[in-house]
Length: 168
Image (cartoon, rainbow, N blue to C red):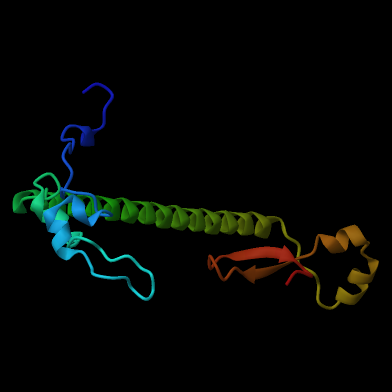
């Protein structure tokens, strides 16, 4: 049994059904001669000279072909398949839970980072005087104008953040 597959242990050496005689020659066997047609068909099709059997009879006649599994074997296979399916389901649920946890952790870190950034920027920020705002803005160059920030609430994290004055 070295190198051979599982199916080679019970080889079928006998044909499923054996009929004597040549199917094309009616006089070769008495059973065929009894069923031989008299005359020719109009279509020219040759008649089957012996009674044919159904393919379903092949399975039941030969013991090698009729290898059905016992009830216990089928129950064991069903239990094994159910175990495999439940293990797969559990693995999928664990993977989904891990992804969800990772996403929540990332959002929490992002929210905390934004809060820290906002708190640090709030300490060093300068407020513009509303009375002199027009003159102050006119006096600023482009680089200074780009440094102007406004506060906005991030809808995803719920944290207040500084964004550029012209950002949407």
